[in-house]
Image (cartoon, rainbow, N blue to C red; front, side, top):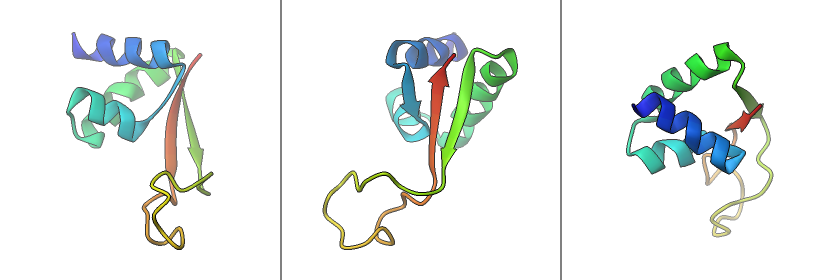
Length: 78
């Protein structure tokens, strides 16, 4: 079942961004968010939001306004 596969992926990684999870399962972020909400309610996974980017992942921009890193969402295995 896909919802358990997403849980297992976060458990294996320990920490995964919303973008990474969605990309790995070839799903839209909105669908992944809904499935992760189930595990958050169960207390298995924790949501972590950072308002400031830690670094530019592409290393190709001149400012953070070029990348959409203003809101970094990650999920952590509890």
